[in-house]
Image (cartoon, each protein chain N blue to C red):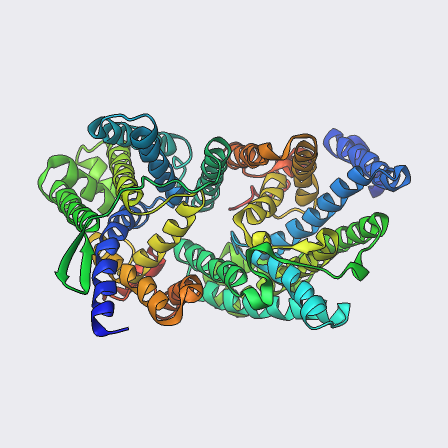
Amino acid sequence: MGVTAYISIILNGMLTGGVYGLFSSAFTFQAGALNFANFSYGAFIMLSMYLTYYTIAVWHLPVAAAVALILLINAAFGILLRKTVLKTGNFGTQILCTMGISMIVINGVSFFCSSYPRDLAILEKRLFLHPEISIGLIQLGCFGLAAAILLGFHLFLTKTWQGIAIRAVVQNREIAAVFGINTSHILDLAFSLSCCLIGVSGIMLMVMFPVTPVFGDYLQNLAFIVCISAGLGNMWGAFFSGIFIGVVPSLIMAILGARFQDPLLYLLFVLILLIRPYGIFTKNKNVVRAF
Amino acid sequence: MNLQPKALAFVREPRKLIGAILLLSAVILILYIPVTKNRRLMTIGIMAFMYIALGESWNIGAMTGLFSIAHSAFFGLGVYGITITLTRFQGPVIAGILAGLILNIILAVIIGGISSKLSGLYFTMALIGLSATIYSLSVQWVSLTGGSSGISMPRAYLLPKRTLYFIALGIAVLSMIFYVFLRRSKAGTCFVTTRENPSLAAALGSNVPFWRILSTVLSASMAGLCGSFYAFHLMSNNSEVFSGAYSLKIMMVSIVGGINSVWGPVLGCLLIIMDEYIRGSMPSGLAPLSVVIYALILILMALVKPAGLASFFEKPGDRHAAKN
């Protein structure tokens, strides 16, 4: 393969990685900032992907209605999770219950929809930068949208009253309560917002990849890798390291072959955890035992 | 003044009396099943005994606070160790069991080392990463593991159902005895102090990383031995043994039954019996629903009664509530 092929692989990996960055930043927000260990996270991305498939390709709803429905369902699930399973501060109970919920969602989907892969079958237009270097227009659009959504979320967190309240609660719950913030209400809001981010990234992923019931597990593992390499709780770091993680698997596949992709990726993850558990792109070492 | 002999003490406590009666009837049932020669009941019994042993092994890990959410990695390494040795290298059975054990000890030392470096969410994610590495290797390394279709044991090692039943019973009883022995030994005390207050234990001169690694190694070796047995029971193994469904079942047996109690897995395996029974009587297309049922039970128990079923048979003050 020539240099142009590698440039093409790297560019397309970066564009896919933007969406990885979006859903990983939702996870890093839940785990790092809100202190919820949500292991049913991949299952809900998978559920959003299936909902996208059914609303658009099977029930033929208008796209705006489909997006609204998916966001609504995700926010409702978020509040439900927060009210039942994530009410306790006990870390083990949270992991256990959300793993159980993920099992329920995965097996429910494979019971009702079968594990046959579903695809929206969109014929992709490609943009040629050079006769041998091309990027997918859909991927480019998703990358731009993901960056715009993250920027919007960042503006929400820094400029609006609710966003500032969320940050105050994240920093210190007791003091925030003293200043008249209804902490549990704010946590509900923050959690359901991050679930909406999951829904949006599910829609984008459905446009790019075929979905099976276990695809969510793969995405969840990817999100772990992204969050760990960025440092847990660091949302912009998660976006950039998502771009990095988007490039690595396609490079491994191009250089060594597809069968080394998953084992090497997970091994890389364990190595990062062992050598720099506070993240590659951060200098703060205190984050490891903070949870 | 207590003049009655200690052996009769349970007569005065209705909870323990009920427990004793239930245990006696269970023993009679266990001895009666092989007499009936009912293959289906024996299969359910084998699975229940194996999960008792796996639950005890999870409990040993939990003694030092190891929240092993990827226990099926140890179990699956045991299965693959023996199957690969017997089919690819034509080695003896002992060599297969040893291969599984050695693989498990290596993995356990790695995990124990990680657990003394990381904690909480980071440790859980590291476990998931390690088990995903092993799972994807078992799927991708086709020349050794047979890929996702798996490999079958040689037909020569097909054992009669009744032999398997008694081996499984032996494994379950031995694992329970080992758990009680370990809990009462000095090592067990060191394990529990490591979980309850690692900083204080280290200050009092206990070698905290060593005890963590030791308990992980013991737990992993037991799970690996169960895996070696399971290979003889199943005969054709595929990479599903590394999947999250097995981990969830093992955790369910220990947590629904009651962590830190020798009787916990014994009570928890009632769910395995129910699961096997439902799956045996339903058409195979409904199998995902069975997972839904036991995941629901797990969530309910974790939220409503974290101390587990075993706490029904104890006085309220007997034991601290199980700490997850």
